[in-house]
Amino acid sequence: MAQLRIGSRGSQLALWQANHISALLREHGHQVELEIIKTTGDKITDVALAKVGTKGMFTKEIEEALAEGRVDLAVHSLKDLPTDLPPGFEIAAITTRVNPQDVFLSINYNSIQELPKGARVGTSSLRRQAQIKAVRPDLNIHPLRGNVDTRVRKLEQGEYDAIILAAAGLTRLGKTEHFKQIIPPEEMCPAAGQGALGIEIRLGDTRMRELLSFLDDKDARATTVCERTLLNKLGGGCQVPIGAYAEVNNGELVLTGVCARPDGTEVLREVATGTDPVALGNSVGETLLRRGADKILEDVYGEAAAAPQQP
Image 1 (tube, one colour):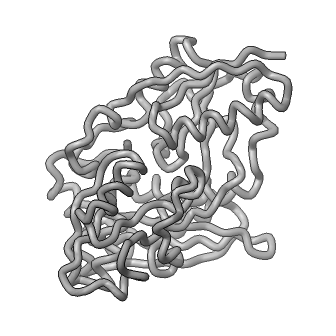
Image 2 (cartoon, one colour):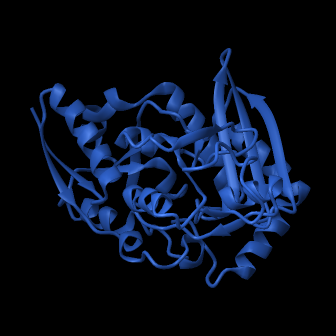
């Protein structure tokens, strides 16, 4: 069987993900090695993500290793992968998706609604910030960077009254002790691809694509392609206030798209159904643009220190 080399970031969550894929590959008889690669996003930890403006900030160095043949495949959180991959790469598999929703974590409060006026909420996501401010404009949103452990520790030390993180990462790491509320998508639309892993390979590497085909989940691919198409239509990355959430329901896709001002004063939401993931994503994206998403995103890019291109 094949000797496979996996490229991964070195964070606790990234290593969990890479080891998870390694275990599945070993079950199929392959030998697997991990190569840990430090990315730009790992090196810049003191600046809000929306202000960094570096395309491929969590993937560029890993893709360089892939292109040079130092690794055979890369395991990513799908939401970190740009919707337009650089030339020479493809997504060979999208794994079975776990809960794509966001979670409210707090020591003393059970929900966003319970927070007192002026409470400090930690998140570096403009998408989360916008949707929180839409329902609670009186809350103070503060940047929150670092790995999952660091973020949870800052909550425990009292730096924040609450923080918002993805359910998937916390569940994978078994860090659910401060879960107070899994926020429904109608209140906080998740990021495109949240909860799924994307396995990236060199474009045209048919042998590797075949070896990894068992990891590709039909529903996960359909829903995330739909979400990523919407994101691409809006010209946004994961550091702009755009949410996209698709579900399979009775053989049809149901897609919710959200574009919002970071201060929560304007939230555009669109829901539509269809059977073609790409057509549905484009359609909802076009509708949001017609309703004013283009103006919102122009204003966001104008306010950022550097246009927050897709990481």
